[in-house]
Structures are given as structure tokens and as C-alpha cells.
Image 1: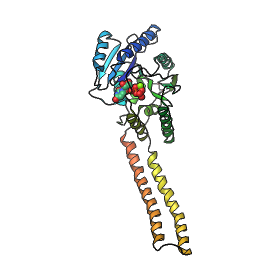
Image 2: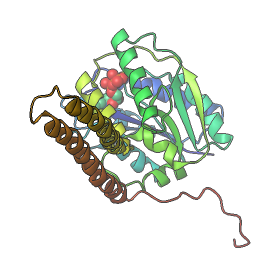
Image 3: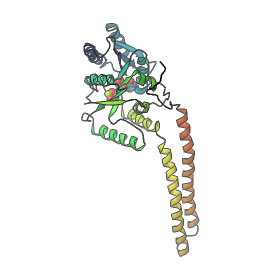
Image 4: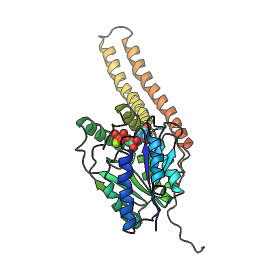
Length: 317
Ligand code: UDP
Ligand code: MG
């Protein structure tokens, strides 16, 4: 029987912790009863340097439910993406399959069973995808959609409307742990792993209590990180722009020379305008070219695995 670990990053979640613990334990017990997961499956709360009583509550829950509730205390606030990574990597050595979910229960815990079913069908990663954005403000809806569009333009593979509610098999987490980069954008990394994936759909709810730990500033930072950690396209765009301007400068030259010979220009204008167009283009071209090398260096220093092996057929045991 497969042992499940539900990984929950928590930052100042004292209001929701007990509710989340109860709801997730109910899910565990239900699945254990149905014989779908091992009886020692557990929840792993990751305390991300909370300033309130979150950790005390996790300890309390662990005392009351020593098998089903476990905890990891990070030595300071590192942010959601790192906290989740710490939890997943800790959980991988203690379990066969992990599910990550936010502490606020905005994601529907009732689709966890469906995720486990897909895992048993052989999927290594199962994405939780939200159906609609009814509960979001107009602003959040528009910015989120714009974000996915920009990501697509930049050639970054992302799963539409998927946050970090996700099942990962042990080997998927193992593979993921080999991506040693510090600029983390988990949603973008999962498709890189390349194992078989599937999705389950649910309605995202309001937070059960407390308020969002993701203010606009953090959201924008995550979005920018998502793009800049996966795409060197912006650099290529600069190079392209440089090319375009150098070519335009030829047209500008023709125009400037015609104006010069038809004789109604200020003295000095022709040479000035020509230099401005040509040098401007040349500079952008040069910056873009240097950028291409920086882009390569950037990709190299990430030291991402060059391939992930999914299966090997061989005669050796
Ligand atoms: N979180 C975290 N560290 C942080 C900020 C948030 O571990 O620095 C956790 C938080 O406790 C929650 C999850 O990340 O479990 C998502 O945060 P939140 O629900 O506030 O984001 P929203 O749903 O509003 O985008
Ligand atoms: Mg939330």
C-alpha cells in the first residue's frame, strides 16, 4: 500500500491550522478506510518562519496525533516556494507519494481521492486545476490571465490555472530535487520533469480564515521570477530590435539623403540623423549579442539535469 504525505506550507496560519489539520485528517482516514493509502500516511506541516503561534499549534497537533500529523520547522521565513520545496524533499524519504496543498483550504480536498486514483493508474504528477475564477476579484482574474498569456509568449510551459495543489510520486520529487536552482518557480519546473501527468478539476473557494499571504507585491515578484527563470526570450527580443533598427536606419538614410539633395534641410541634420539611427541600432545589436552569451551562461549555471529517464528495458535484474 502506498504511503501518502500531504505537504502543507504555513506562514502565520494560526487561524486555519486546526481546521486544516482536521479536514486533512478526515481525508486521510477516509482514504485509509477505502484501502487506497497506507495506514501510516500523514500530513507534513512546514512552518515557514511564522511570527504567530503556528508552530506551537503544529506541535500540539503532533502530540494529539503522533502518526498522522508531522511537522518541519524552517529556521526563518523563506517564502512559499522554498517552504514547499523543503516539505516535498523531506517527505520524499518518508513516503511513496506526496500531495501539496495550501493551509487555507482554498483548494478542494475532496479531489485528493481522484488524484490518488490517477496515481494508481500510473501518473507521476497530477495537477489540481481550478475550473473558474468566480471567487476572485476582477483585478486578480485579469492579472492572472495576462500572466499566463505572457508566459506562453515567452515559451514557458505552464499548466493553465494550476497553483501548487499537486500530487507527485516519490520518483517525481526525487527528479525534481535534482533541479538545484535558487530562483524557484515550481509550476514551471514540473513540466520539465517530463513524467506522465494528468489533471483533476475543482472549484477554488474562499480562504477558511485569516488573510492572503500573497499581496500584490509578492504576486508580481513570483510572476517575474516565473518568466526570468525559464526564458531567455527577452534577450533575444533586444537582439531582434537591434536588427530591426539597423535595417530601419537604411531607410532613414535614404530619406535623409533625398531631403539633403532636394535641398531643404538645416546644415548638419543629415549627418546627425544618420548617426543617431545607425549607432542606436548598432548599440542595441551589440547589447543583444552580449545578452545571448549571458543567456547561455545563465542556463549553464542552473545545472539542470540534461535528461530524466522514465523507464529502462534491459536484461539485467
Ligand atoms: N505561505 C508560506 N510562506 C510565505 C507566504 C505564504 O508558506 O511567505 C503559505 C501560506 O501559509 C499558504 C500558502 O503559502 O499555505 C499560500 O498562501 P496564500 O493562501 O496566502 O496565497 P493566496 O491563496 O492568497 O494566493
Ligand atoms: Mg490561499
